[in-house]
Image 1 (cartoon, rainbow, N blue to C red):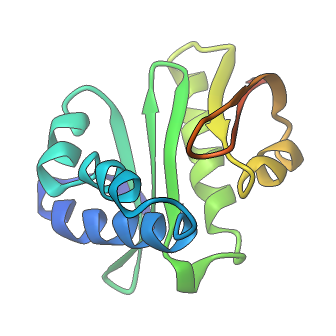
Image 2: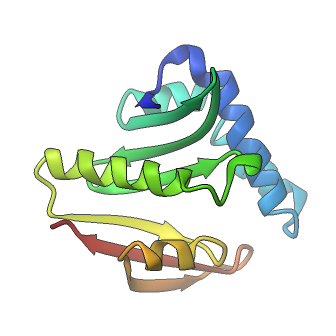
Length: 147
């Protein structure tokens, strides 16, 4: 079930996201990974929820995924590592696209890395531009027209 984030979710959601970050970015300097993880502390997630739509995917009382919509920008889609490749990322992405469309948006934007680029491309996103990072490789800034 996809639902809006509630403050009681903050710790569990922070754990889900930071676990993903640490495993998926293990090739980077520990200080860089830790800095990125601090952006997803329970307190920072609660702050972000005041200005963005954060949704969670819950199954059997456990959070297994999340995504954020701010204006027409989709961000921070994370799926519990054990639940990946089961269509949950697609569910969250489509839900957020629908919310953007409900708000009158005709385009959505997001960014992806080497690991997520192919997923977004399959979902109809087109590369707008690429930024070569000094520490984290390429970031693909992508857009999709909502029909």
